[in-house]
Image (cartoon, rainbow, N blue to C red):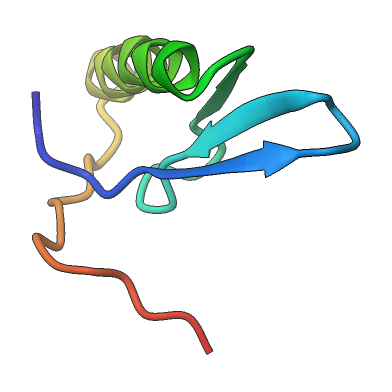
Length: 70
């Protein structure tokens, strides 16, 4: 699987860890632990990429570095 940056944080509102893949719009998952959120988002990434390829949509290339936020 490609190497995309994954951001994991605790969401008090959802009472769960949330894992997001900023380079894949809308790709996110959650879990009761850091490890389960990571496992779930890896599965979501695979599905996101499969669907994009099936639809003939462009698949972003991983930037390979740390994302910058302003």
